Length: 62
Image (cartoon, one colour):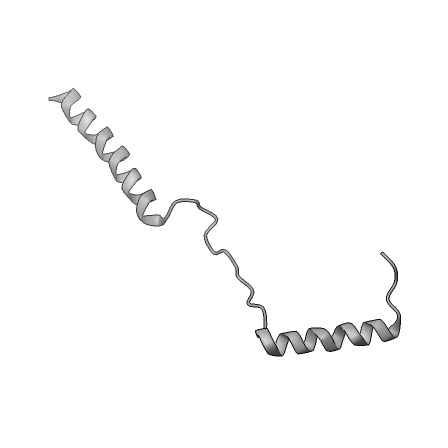
C-alpha cells in the first residue's frame, strides 16, 4: 500500500468526519459473557445432574 500524501490524509479525515456526522459514531460492543449457554441453562443442567446423582444415591441406600 502506498503512503498517503498530506493532501490525501486531509481529504480522508474530512470524508471520515462527514460520514461520522451522517451515520453517527460507531458503538463498541463488548461481549461480557464468553459462555455460549445462558446462566439459566447452566443452572438447569446442573440441577438435573446433581438432582439425578442425589436420587441415585437415595435409591442405592434404600
